[in-house]
Length: 185
Image (cartoon, rainbow, N blue to C red; front, side, top):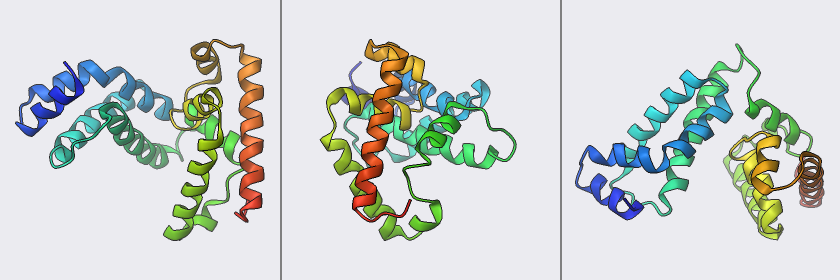
């Protein structure tokens, strides 16, 4: 079943939309949740909450692409849960990814203001537009999907060391751009 057909089921308010969405995009959504939360049961709950979020937002939204839309819902839900649980546990891939970026992103106190956060997002989006496809793939898989470096290297068909070096160089490039733009690090 295509994404358009699934979205049409949502507009018809057919419960089949959820099962078709799970069949088509459940793996990606589950992986995002698991990478951030690091716990299978928490990830399963997050996936179910994602389907509820999709049910409540489609309609009126008609997302395209659907996979990105539901992965974003899952990422937001998992991130909220991650922060709620963070005081109790610190062992997920998301922790590792955040730690890696900590030295090139500003402290959270400097982006509390919504305008500053929007400006930072615009700088990062512009930065991503300058990257090659491979570097953007590595960056997004690591810092958006929170995949492990070994998984990313395998997906990209490169060695672990090559992926690690390329990600390091991309982070350094981002740090230089943020410094140039005057974003406090």
